[in-house]
Image (cartoon, rainbow over the protein chains, first blue to last red):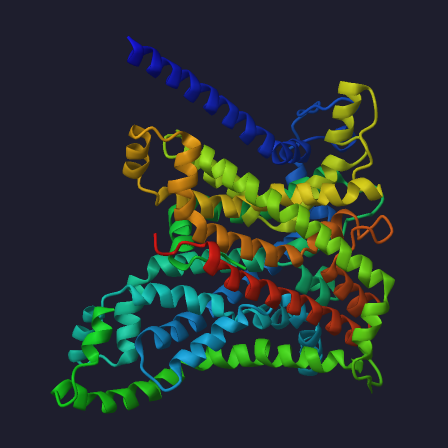
Length: 282
Length: 311
């Protein structure tokens, strides 16, 4: 009897808890829902005296018009190019050095590793001034290389992959090396295939960091129409009179889409990646 | 670990005699493996870090003559009322943002325990603004806060009055930026805390429950000691990233009204690329670096006191 009322009480409490959670989640999502709704409204119905989600028509055309209103096609291609090349450089450089720290014995390994970790403490904001000067010296101001290379060598990737490599049993490699594999063979044929989950995590974090990066492109890009990335393109409209908010929201939603898809596809790996390293993307 | 000790076999065994040769051979390859990262970090991190200190000692316009100033840029910062205000603003942001972020993320992580149905979906949901471009998220909030936007029209129809001028008033602007930043950023710590809470063994909580411990006691004496490493990690990282706040005030208020929401990184940006005074920008950047090193040091000393890594 008492246990019966107890379980009913628990069910009621669970139900209330769930309902509250759904409400919290809806409030949390409200800005994005409102943004999506705005991206589908006609321009003259964006600001209305009473809040409403759906205008007189659902204008999917806004998503096409946004690309004519501003060179968003160009911005998306630029962002994609910078993020993909940057990610490839990060993954290649990090996996190589991570292998050295995890598996090869050389003088000064521990000290060098501490130095690598120490660089994680240096914030980007300290580096931007000398980096701008360095780019001037290299003649890289307003170039794709300047958007890619300065941030393609972070110790974060090395650290993340090293932690993973250390969990791979050494016997797997020993066998390959007895069979005549050099360190490069062992790295390419044994380590990299095994490290696929960790590399996936690094790829996603790096891609997302490049994709959303704002401060550095703002500094180093002069010809936004030519070399601008998506965040720069969006920020162009801040404070302008007569901003086309419906088109702006269409572009903003499109800018979010690739990263949202990546997170949904790789959700399990991402949580594990956070745990393996105790570190997130930068 | 086991393999590491096995390579350090007693001297005189065949294995130990073979080791030096192996060491040399590995060493040669090691530098090839390390090459790209080492060169990249040296050129793009170590050298610029030192160079930043160098530039901070000069009057260094983007173009034109450079003059050595010694520590004049730093004394200028100390005496600049705008820089003082900027330090105050940044500290205010940190003091409001960090506790709010931690409370919201830990509270939701505890609430969304393993018995909650659809919890993975909630995790992904809260993580979305963390991973999407900051500028896109902030643009969404600019829309909401426009006159006639969601807040304004909502307030009109509910109370028949205009919403406060959230971004245009000195008293509202900073709290608004903090609130938007918490909305955008708490999902990261939420994920860290949920993962940590999953590691707390249910059996211990159950047996404490049988022994008559109430939920608060169970949290205080079982859960809390086990998740302190995560809380320590999250606090340190959140503190550091919050001192670096830039895009939110830059796009929402441009630092205004007046300089009431101008932050340290905005000051670096303005000095460097609006006033073209790289020396002062580099000096302000180093102030940020010193703050971050200080937090890291304090946290690492402090953790010995209250983090239970051994539990």
